Length: 450
Image 1 (cartoon, rainbow, N blue to C red):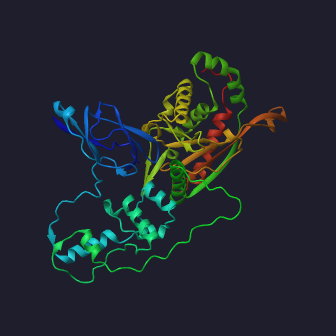
Image 2 (image 1 turned 120 degrees about the vertical axis):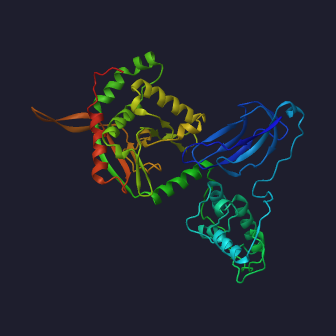
Image 3 (image 1 turned 180 degrees about the vertical axis):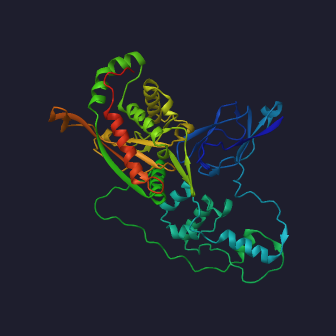
Protein backbone atom coordinates (compact mmCIF):
# COMPACT_ATOMS: atom_id res chain seq x y z
CA UNK A 1 0.00 0.00 0.00
CA UNK A 2 1.30 3.46 -0.88
CA UNK A 3 0.09 7.00 -1.41
CA UNK A 4 1.09 8.62 -4.69
CA UNK A 5 1.08 12.40 -5.20
CA UNK A 6 -0.65 13.76 -8.30
CA UNK A 7 1.09 17.01 -9.25
CA UNK A 8 0.14 19.84 -11.59
CA UNK A 9 2.01 18.87 -14.80
CA UNK A 10 4.38 21.15 -16.64
CA UNK A 11 2.55 22.45 -19.73
CA UNK A 12 5.41 24.23 -21.49
CA UNK A 13 8.35 26.57 -20.95
CA UNK A 14 6.34 29.73 -20.37
CA UNK A 15 3.50 28.15 -18.35
CA UNK A 16 4.04 28.56 -14.61
CA UNK A 17 0.52 27.89 -13.29
CA UNK A 18 -2.87 26.54 -14.31
CA UNK A 19 -6.48 27.08 -13.23
CA UNK A 20 -8.59 24.10 -12.15
CA UNK A 21 -11.78 24.05 -14.22
CA UNK A 22 -13.45 20.82 -13.09
CA UNK A 23 -12.77 17.76 -10.94
CA UNK A 24 -13.96 14.57 -12.66
CA UNK A 25 -13.20 12.45 -9.58
CA UNK A 26 -13.92 12.94 -5.89
CA UNK A 27 -12.38 11.42 -2.77
CA UNK A 28 -13.21 7.75 -2.56
CA UNK A 29 -13.54 7.28 -6.33
CA UNK A 30 -11.41 4.61 -7.97
CA UNK A 31 -9.21 5.68 -10.84
CA UNK A 32 -7.19 3.81 -13.44
CA UNK A 33 -3.77 4.81 -14.69
CA UNK A 34 -4.02 7.46 -17.43
CA UNK A 35 -7.72 8.04 -16.63
CA UNK A 36 -8.64 11.74 -16.56
CA UNK A 37 -8.92 13.13 -13.03
CA UNK A 38 -9.50 16.84 -13.66
CA UNK A 39 -9.67 19.52 -16.33
CA UNK A 40 -7.39 22.54 -16.19
CA UNK A 41 -6.81 25.72 -18.17
CA UNK A 42 -3.64 27.66 -18.88
CA UNK A 43 -3.24 30.92 -20.76
CA UNK A 44 -2.68 28.82 -23.88
CA UNK A 45 -5.13 25.94 -23.95
CA UNK A 46 -7.54 23.83 -21.87
CA UNK A 47 -6.33 20.35 -21.04
CA UNK A 48 -7.01 17.18 -19.04
CA UNK A 49 -4.79 15.79 -16.30
CA UNK A 50 -4.60 11.97 -16.20
CA UNK A 51 -3.87 9.82 -13.19
CA UNK A 52 -0.28 8.64 -12.89
CA UNK A 53 -1.28 5.53 -10.91
CA UNK A 54 -4.18 3.13 -10.39
CA UNK A 55 -5.95 3.32 -7.05
CA UNK A 56 -8.44 5.39 -5.08
CA UNK A 57 -8.55 9.17 -4.77
CA UNK A 58 -7.71 9.73 -1.12
CA UNK A 59 -7.51 13.52 -0.98
CA UNK A 60 -8.13 16.54 -3.19
CA UNK A 61 -6.06 19.55 -2.20
CA UNK A 62 -7.47 22.33 -4.39
CA UNK A 63 -10.90 23.57 -5.40
CA UNK A 64 -12.40 24.57 -8.73
CA UNK A 65 -11.10 27.96 -9.97
CA UNK A 66 -7.97 27.75 -7.82
CA UNK A 67 -4.79 28.83 -9.62
CA UNK A 68 -2.09 26.26 -8.89
CA UNK A 69 1.66 26.57 -9.62
CA UNK A 70 3.25 23.93 -11.82
CA UNK A 71 4.71 21.03 -9.81
CA UNK A 72 2.35 21.50 -6.85
CA UNK A 73 0.65 18.40 -5.39
CA UNK A 74 -3.06 18.69 -6.25
CA UNK A 75 -4.36 15.29 -5.11
CA UNK A 76 -3.26 12.04 -3.50
CA UNK A 77 -4.00 8.55 -4.76
CA UNK A 78 -3.90 5.44 -2.54
CA UNK A 79 -2.54 2.44 -4.39
CA UNK A 80 -2.09 -1.22 -3.45
CA UNK A 81 -4.27 -3.90 -1.90
CA UNK A 82 -5.97 -1.58 0.61
CA UNK A 83 -6.97 0.96 -2.01
CA UNK A 84 -10.39 -0.61 -2.61
CA UNK A 85 -11.34 -0.43 1.08
CA UNK A 86 -9.80 2.96 1.82
CA UNK A 87 -12.41 5.36 3.25
CA UNK A 88 -13.25 8.48 1.31
CA UNK A 89 -11.32 11.47 2.57
CA UNK A 90 -12.93 14.90 2.71
CA UNK A 91 -11.73 17.61 0.39
CA UNK A 92 -8.86 19.34 2.10
CA UNK A 93 -8.65 23.09 2.21
CA UNK A 94 -6.30 24.74 -0.18
CA UNK A 95 -2.70 25.17 0.94
CA UNK A 96 -3.48 28.81 1.62
CA UNK A 97 -5.91 27.83 4.39
CA UNK A 98 -3.88 24.86 5.70
CA UNK A 99 -2.15 25.37 9.06
CA UNK A 100 1.43 26.45 8.61
CA UNK A 101 4.31 24.73 10.43
CA UNK A 102 5.12 26.20 13.82
CA UNK A 103 7.35 29.24 13.31
CA UNK A 104 10.52 29.78 15.31
CA UNK A 105 10.59 32.83 17.63
CA UNK A 106 12.81 35.62 16.36
CA UNK A 107 13.40 39.14 17.64
CA UNK A 108 10.63 41.59 16.82
CA UNK A 109 12.78 43.95 14.71
CA UNK A 110 13.44 41.07 12.27
CA UNK A 111 9.72 40.32 12.09
CA UNK A 112 9.05 43.96 11.28
CA UNK A 113 11.52 43.93 8.41
CA UNK A 114 10.14 40.68 7.06
CA UNK A 115 6.55 41.95 7.06
CA UNK A 116 7.34 45.27 5.47
CA UNK A 117 9.07 43.37 2.65
CA UNK A 118 6.13 40.97 2.19
CA UNK A 119 3.31 43.47 2.26
CA UNK A 120 4.66 46.59 0.56
CA UNK A 121 2.76 46.75 -2.76
CA UNK A 122 4.89 46.79 -5.90
CA UNK A 123 4.05 47.94 -9.41
CA UNK A 124 5.89 44.85 -10.70
CA UNK A 125 3.67 42.31 -8.94
CA UNK A 126 2.47 39.28 -10.88
CA UNK A 127 -1.28 38.73 -11.02
CA UNK A 128 -2.77 35.48 -12.27
CA UNK A 129 -5.42 35.59 -15.03
CA UNK A 130 -8.05 34.48 -12.48
CA UNK A 131 -7.26 37.37 -10.12
CA UNK A 132 -7.28 39.87 -13.00
CA UNK A 133 -10.63 38.53 -14.22
CA UNK A 134 -12.20 38.84 -10.78
CA UNK A 135 -10.83 42.37 -10.45
CA UNK A 136 -12.24 43.35 -13.84
CA UNK A 137 -15.67 41.85 -13.07
CA UNK A 138 -15.89 43.53 -9.67
CA UNK A 139 -14.65 46.94 -10.80
CA UNK A 140 -11.40 46.79 -8.82
CA UNK A 141 -8.87 49.20 -10.33
CA UNK A 142 -5.19 48.36 -10.74
CA UNK A 143 -4.34 50.89 -8.02
CA UNK A 144 -6.68 49.05 -5.62
CA UNK A 145 -5.31 45.69 -6.72
CA UNK A 146 -1.74 46.78 -5.99
CA UNK A 147 -2.81 47.87 -2.49
CA UNK A 148 -4.13 44.43 -1.53
CA UNK A 149 -1.67 42.54 0.72
CA UNK A 150 -0.95 39.19 -0.93
CA UNK A 151 -0.80 36.00 1.14
CA UNK A 152 0.41 33.81 -1.73
CA UNK A 153 3.90 32.78 -2.76
CA UNK A 154 6.28 35.78 -2.86
CA UNK A 155 3.45 38.07 -1.76
CA UNK A 156 1.16 37.27 -4.69
CA UNK A 157 -2.49 38.23 -4.45
CA UNK A 158 -4.54 35.02 -4.40
CA UNK A 159 -8.16 34.35 -5.29
CA UNK A 160 -9.07 34.40 -1.60
CA UNK A 161 -7.33 37.78 -1.10
CA UNK A 162 -9.24 39.47 -3.94
CA UNK A 163 -12.58 37.93 -2.90
CA UNK A 164 -12.08 39.06 0.71
CA UNK A 165 -11.23 42.55 -0.53
CA UNK A 166 -14.37 42.68 -2.70
CA UNK A 167 -16.54 41.44 0.19
CA UNK A 168 -15.15 44.13 2.54
CA UNK A 169 -15.62 46.77 -0.14
CA UNK A 170 -19.27 45.86 -0.73
CA UNK A 171 -20.05 45.76 3.00
CA UNK A 172 -18.31 49.10 3.63
CA UNK A 173 -15.69 47.58 5.91
CA UNK A 174 -12.15 48.99 5.81
CA UNK A 175 -9.86 47.31 3.32
CA UNK A 176 -6.64 45.71 4.65
CA UNK A 177 -3.48 47.74 4.23
CA UNK A 178 0.23 46.88 4.34
CA UNK A 179 1.28 46.41 7.92
CA UNK A 180 3.50 48.97 9.65
CA UNK A 181 4.98 48.29 13.10
CA UNK A 182 6.16 51.49 14.77
CA UNK A 183 8.17 50.06 17.66
CA UNK A 184 9.82 46.80 18.70
CA UNK A 185 7.54 44.25 20.35
CA UNK A 186 8.39 41.38 22.66
CA UNK A 187 9.66 38.31 20.86
CA UNK A 188 6.82 36.27 19.38
CA UNK A 189 6.23 33.98 16.42
CA UNK A 190 6.78 36.00 13.24
CA UNK A 191 3.48 35.26 11.54
CA UNK A 192 1.63 37.48 9.12
CA UNK A 193 -1.55 37.15 11.19
CA UNK A 194 0.06 38.64 14.29
CA UNK A 195 1.39 41.67 12.46
CA UNK A 196 -1.78 42.31 10.53
CA UNK A 197 -3.88 42.25 13.71
CA UNK A 198 -1.75 45.02 15.23
CA UNK A 199 -1.85 47.21 12.14
CA UNK A 200 -3.71 50.54 12.49
CA UNK A 201 -7.23 50.57 11.09
CA UNK A 202 -7.33 52.53 7.82
CA UNK A 203 -10.25 54.74 6.84
CA UNK A 204 -13.10 53.02 4.95
CA UNK A 205 -12.62 52.76 1.21
CA UNK A 206 -14.59 55.25 -0.81
CA UNK A 207 -17.59 53.64 -2.53
CA UNK A 208 -17.14 53.11 -6.26
CA UNK A 209 -20.05 54.17 -8.39
CA UNK A 210 -21.35 51.47 -10.69
CA UNK A 211 -20.92 52.17 -14.41
CA UNK A 212 -24.12 53.10 -16.21
CA UNK A 213 -24.68 52.78 -19.94
CA UNK A 214 -26.98 55.10 -21.81
CA UNK A 215 -28.99 54.19 -24.87
CA UNK A 216 -30.08 50.82 -26.17
CA UNK A 217 -27.13 48.54 -25.34
CA UNK A 218 -26.37 44.89 -24.74
CA UNK A 219 -23.78 43.96 -22.12
CA UNK A 220 -21.79 40.80 -22.92
CA UNK A 221 -19.41 39.28 -20.40
CA UNK A 222 -16.07 38.21 -21.87
CA UNK A 223 -15.46 34.49 -21.71
CA UNK A 224 -12.23 33.21 -20.13
CA UNK A 225 -10.35 32.87 -23.42
CA UNK A 226 -11.29 36.35 -24.60
CA UNK A 227 -10.07 37.80 -21.30
CA UNK A 228 -6.75 35.98 -21.70
CA UNK A 229 -6.42 37.21 -25.28
CA UNK A 230 -7.10 40.77 -24.17
CA UNK A 231 -4.53 40.48 -21.39
CA UNK A 232 -1.89 39.05 -23.77
CA UNK A 233 -2.45 41.74 -26.38
CA UNK A 234 -2.04 44.55 -23.84
CA UNK A 235 1.07 42.91 -22.35
CA UNK A 236 2.61 42.47 -25.81
CA UNK A 237 2.16 46.15 -26.66
CA UNK A 238 3.68 47.11 -23.30
CA UNK A 239 6.59 44.69 -23.80
CA UNK A 240 7.64 45.20 -27.43
CA UNK A 241 8.00 48.48 -29.34
CA UNK A 242 6.05 47.47 -32.45
CA UNK A 243 7.07 48.48 -35.97
CA UNK A 244 5.14 47.25 -39.03
CA UNK A 245 6.49 47.03 -42.58
CA UNK A 246 4.43 46.37 -45.72
CA UNK A 247 5.04 44.94 -49.17
CA UNK A 248 3.06 43.25 -51.93
CA UNK A 249 3.64 40.09 -53.94
CA UNK A 250 2.50 38.86 -57.32
CA UNK A 251 1.33 35.35 -56.41
CA UNK A 252 -0.16 34.48 -59.79
CA UNK A 253 2.06 31.44 -60.34
CA UNK A 254 1.24 30.10 -56.89
CA UNK A 255 -2.53 30.60 -57.33
CA UNK A 256 -2.60 28.97 -60.78
CA UNK A 257 -0.49 26.01 -59.59
CA UNK A 258 -2.78 25.35 -56.63
CA UNK A 259 -5.85 25.58 -58.83
CA UNK A 260 -4.31 23.07 -61.22
CA UNK A 261 -3.27 20.45 -58.66
CA UNK A 262 -5.78 20.75 -55.80
CA UNK A 263 -8.07 17.91 -56.97
CA UNK A 264 -5.27 15.47 -57.73
CA UNK A 265 -3.47 16.48 -54.52
CA UNK A 266 -6.51 15.70 -52.36
CA UNK A 267 -7.14 12.41 -54.20
CA UNK A 268 -3.54 11.26 -53.92
CA UNK A 269 -2.62 12.54 -50.46
CA UNK A 270 -5.99 12.41 -48.71
CA UNK A 271 -5.89 16.04 -47.61
CA UNK A 272 -6.56 19.44 -49.14
CA UNK A 273 -3.85 21.81 -50.29
CA UNK A 274 -4.52 25.30 -48.95
CA UNK A 275 -2.40 28.43 -49.19
CA UNK A 276 -1.21 28.17 -45.56
CA UNK A 277 1.42 25.41 -46.06
CA UNK A 278 2.72 27.30 -49.11
CA UNK A 279 3.14 30.43 -47.00
CA UNK A 280 4.80 28.49 -44.17
CA UNK A 281 7.20 26.85 -46.62
CA UNK A 282 8.32 30.27 -47.91
CA UNK A 283 8.66 31.71 -44.40
CA UNK A 284 10.77 28.77 -43.19
CA UNK A 285 13.18 29.16 -46.11
CA UNK A 286 13.63 32.88 -45.41
CA UNK A 287 14.13 32.35 -41.66
CA UNK A 288 17.17 30.21 -42.51
CA UNK A 289 18.60 33.20 -44.38
CA UNK A 290 17.76 35.68 -41.58
CA UNK A 291 17.88 33.70 -38.30
CA UNK A 292 17.60 36.77 -36.04
CA UNK A 293 13.90 36.93 -36.96
CA UNK A 294 13.55 33.56 -35.20
CA UNK A 295 14.54 34.69 -31.72
CA UNK A 296 13.38 36.01 -28.37
CA UNK A 297 14.71 38.39 -25.71
CA UNK A 298 15.74 37.50 -22.16
CA UNK A 299 16.78 40.68 -20.37
CA UNK A 300 19.77 41.97 -22.34
CA UNK A 301 20.31 38.63 -24.11
CA UNK A 302 19.09 37.65 -27.59
CA UNK A 303 18.10 33.99 -27.76
CA UNK A 304 18.31 32.80 -31.39
CA UNK A 305 16.18 29.67 -31.86
CA UNK A 306 17.65 26.91 -34.01
CA UNK A 307 14.29 25.16 -34.37
CA UNK A 308 11.84 26.76 -36.79
CA UNK A 309 8.40 26.32 -35.23
CA UNK A 310 5.75 28.33 -37.05
CA UNK A 311 2.60 29.30 -35.16
CA UNK A 312 -0.52 29.81 -37.26
CA UNK A 313 -3.29 31.97 -35.85
CA UNK A 314 -6.56 30.00 -36.12
CA UNK A 315 -10.07 31.38 -35.67
CA UNK A 316 -12.33 29.31 -33.43
CA UNK A 317 -16.12 28.94 -33.84
CA UNK A 318 -16.53 31.15 -30.76
CA UNK A 319 -14.75 33.99 -32.54
CA UNK A 320 -11.65 33.68 -30.36
CA UNK A 321 -8.18 32.97 -31.70
CA UNK A 322 -5.63 30.31 -30.81
CA UNK A 323 -2.13 29.79 -32.19
CA UNK A 324 -1.19 26.12 -32.64
CA UNK A 325 2.39 25.47 -33.72
CA UNK A 326 3.84 23.52 -36.66
CA UNK A 327 7.06 22.12 -35.16
CA UNK A 328 10.23 21.93 -37.28
CA UNK A 329 8.42 23.36 -40.28
CA UNK A 330 11.67 23.58 -42.27
CA UNK A 331 12.07 19.80 -42.10
CA UNK A 332 8.68 18.98 -43.66
CA UNK A 333 7.97 18.76 -47.36
CA UNK A 334 4.83 20.33 -48.82
CA UNK A 335 2.74 17.19 -48.32
CA UNK A 336 3.84 16.94 -44.71
CA UNK A 337 3.11 20.61 -44.12
CA UNK A 338 -0.35 20.32 -45.67
CA UNK A 339 -1.29 17.33 -43.51
CA UNK A 340 0.09 18.93 -40.37
CA UNK A 341 -1.64 22.26 -41.01
CA UNK A 342 -5.03 20.69 -41.75
CA UNK A 343 -4.93 18.29 -38.80
CA UNK A 344 -3.84 21.03 -36.40
CA UNK A 345 -6.50 23.47 -37.62
CA UNK A 346 -9.21 20.80 -37.28
CA UNK A 347 -8.08 19.95 -33.75
CA UNK A 348 -8.13 23.63 -32.81
CA UNK A 349 -11.69 24.14 -34.08
CA UNK A 350 -12.91 20.95 -32.39
CA UNK A 351 -11.23 21.65 -29.05
CA UNK A 352 -8.86 18.69 -29.33
CA UNK A 353 -5.54 20.51 -29.07
CA UNK A 354 -3.07 19.25 -26.51
CA UNK A 355 -1.00 21.69 -24.41
CA UNK A 356 2.16 20.87 -26.37
CA UNK A 357 0.38 21.82 -29.62
CA UNK A 358 0.54 25.50 -28.65
CA UNK A 359 4.02 25.53 -27.12
CA UNK A 360 7.44 26.36 -28.53
CA UNK A 361 6.46 28.70 -31.36
CA UNK A 362 9.32 30.83 -32.70
CA UNK A 363 7.49 32.84 -35.41
CA UNK A 364 3.80 33.39 -36.17
CA UNK A 365 1.79 33.62 -39.38
CA UNK A 366 -1.70 35.12 -39.40
CA UNK A 367 -3.95 35.16 -42.47
CA UNK A 368 -6.03 38.34 -42.22
CA UNK A 369 -7.17 37.77 -45.78
CA UNK A 370 -9.34 34.83 -44.72
CA UNK A 371 -12.12 37.26 -43.90
CA UNK A 372 -11.47 39.62 -46.80
CA UNK A 373 -9.01 42.05 -45.23
CA UNK A 374 -6.33 43.41 -47.57
CA UNK A 375 -3.70 43.93 -44.88
CA UNK A 376 -3.26 44.29 -41.14
CA UNK A 377 -0.91 45.37 -38.36
CA UNK A 378 -0.66 42.21 -36.23
CA UNK A 379 0.42 42.17 -32.59
CA UNK A 380 3.51 40.12 -31.72
CA UNK A 381 2.89 36.77 -30.06
CA UNK A 382 5.20 36.97 -27.02
CA UNK A 383 7.97 36.01 -26.44
CA UNK A 384 8.59 35.98 -30.20
CA UNK A 385 9.92 39.06 -31.97
CA UNK A 386 7.96 39.05 -35.24
CA UNK A 387 4.60 38.10 -36.75
CA UNK A 388 3.71 38.12 -40.46
CA UNK A 389 0.23 38.78 -41.83
CA UNK A 390 -0.95 37.88 -45.33
CA UNK A 391 -3.93 39.66 -46.84
CA UNK A 392 -6.61 38.66 -49.31
CA UNK A 393 -5.46 37.69 -52.82
CA UNK A 394 -7.06 40.04 -55.34
CA UNK A 395 -6.87 40.35 -59.12
CA UNK A 396 -5.50 43.76 -60.11
CA UNK A 397 -4.09 45.37 -63.25
CA UNK A 398 -0.34 45.78 -62.80
CA UNK A 399 2.59 46.84 -64.94
CA UNK A 400 4.70 43.91 -66.20
CA UNK A 401 8.29 44.72 -67.12
CA UNK A 402 9.76 42.58 -69.91
CA UNK A 403 12.70 42.80 -72.29
CA UNK A 404 10.23 43.73 -75.01
CA UNK A 405 8.85 46.61 -72.94
CA UNK A 406 6.21 47.27 -70.30
CA UNK A 407 2.67 45.99 -70.48
CA UNK A 408 -0.42 45.94 -68.26
CA UNK A 409 -1.79 42.56 -67.20
CA UNK A 410 -4.28 41.13 -64.72
CA UNK A 411 -2.36 39.48 -61.90
CA UNK A 412 -3.15 37.87 -58.55
CA UNK A 413 -1.74 40.32 -55.98
CA UNK A 414 -1.41 40.04 -52.20
CA UNK A 415 -0.23 42.45 -49.50
CA UNK A 416 2.08 41.21 -46.75
CA UNK A 417 2.75 43.01 -43.47
CA UNK A 418 5.05 42.17 -40.61
CA UNK A 419 5.18 43.60 -37.10
CA UNK A 420 8.48 43.18 -35.30
CA UNK A 421 10.12 44.04 -32.00
CA UNK A 422 12.26 47.12 -32.62
CA UNK A 423 14.45 46.30 -29.63
CA UNK A 424 16.38 43.79 -31.75
CA UNK A 425 14.86 43.87 -35.26
CA UNK A 426 15.69 47.10 -37.06
CA UNK A 427 13.80 48.39 -40.05
CA UNK A 428 16.46 47.19 -42.47
CA UNK A 429 16.26 43.58 -41.26
CA UNK A 430 12.47 43.63 -40.93
CA UNK A 431 11.92 45.04 -44.41
CA UNK A 432 14.57 42.78 -45.96
CA UNK A 433 13.03 39.65 -44.47
CA UNK A 434 9.52 40.64 -45.51
CA UNK A 435 10.67 41.37 -49.06
CA UNK A 436 12.47 38.01 -49.16
CA UNK A 437 9.22 36.20 -48.28
CA UNK A 438 7.39 38.14 -51.02
CA UNK A 439 10.05 37.25 -53.61
CA UNK A 440 9.91 33.60 -52.51
CA UNK A 441 6.19 33.55 -53.24
CA UNK A 442 6.57 35.43 -56.52
CA UNK A 443 9.22 33.01 -57.77
CA UNK A 444 7.06 29.97 -57.10
CA UNK A 445 7.73 27.27 -59.71
CA UNK A 446 4.45 26.63 -61.59
CA UNK A 447 5.79 23.31 -62.88
CA UNK A 448 6.81 21.86 -59.51
CA UNK A 449 5.59 18.53 -58.18
CA UNK A 450 4.23 18.03 -54.68
